[in-house]
Length: 114
Length: 111
Image: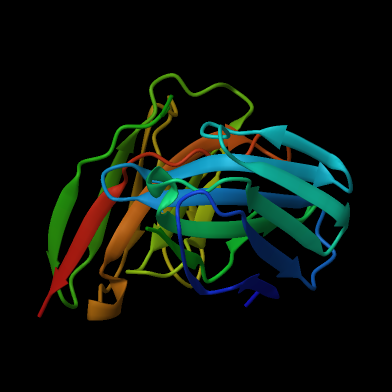
């Protein structure tokens, strides 16, 4: 299994509070992604990074920001959490021109916003 | 926008081959077909990918039609552990473009 960890794995917070989710990789892969998954919507891309300090928006980026100050860490921040951001969040990584060009996913973070 | 069309659900008897279809009629010449699956509550898992030739690995086989407008993922001997949502995705190889997931096919393997 690819070396991807997400923290925390579970979090309950209140509306209006800031929340930061962390994705950490040990593979030295260039690309990192944040997805959210909700019933009826499947996996939707929030933000992604194609290098240190290089990020771009995905399909559902409103209300989220990201930062990548070093290769191994990709942080997802909810500046002021809302109940609509209750979801399961998955991080993924992908190497650069690897032989299979596959994305490897982390175990997920279950976030509940009350 | 999803570039693929998959049936929402399928059943398969344990030990039999599971054939999961995918339509991608607007696929471009430089786009590959990827298959991932997601077992309940886990992160998606890569299965296989191909451009135009049929591919096989230890998990599955991928059959792509000659016109590349559709493909079939084959799990040769399905087990209960293969119960999952299977996603068919098309994207260019090694580009910046991330994977875009559709709704996938929920495969239920029945004992």
